[in-house]
Image (tube, rainbow, N blue to C red; front, side, top):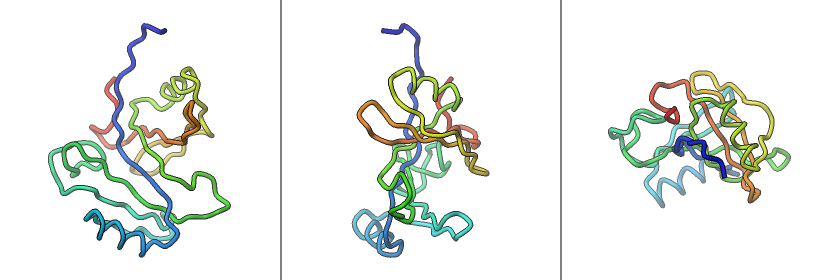
Length: 146
């Protein structure tokens, strides 16, 4: 067992696929009161979702309520990978976090993708086969403590 102290990193975002964007938006609004923002084709028809009213929590986005995370839904495409829910974990250094994932027995899938105005993002598989993601945010106050 390593004696290296690893900082506790918060979940900062979640994602899941949709097959019908309008239907998904109606469902989550009706079932859970979530609000949404539809993005266009330049952002892959992504749908941002807010799971709580604005509050004092600084992480992604800054207006989220304390103790909540927000997320998004994306179009389901059978021929694309990652067509399942995903937790996005905020990290301060994506390359160091990738090494920690590998060192803990996980697998990093691909190289980090830079999302303008958001941060660097990469997918990983944990030791149980779950696919999740890490993000090194570009917004201040959203990263894992050093």
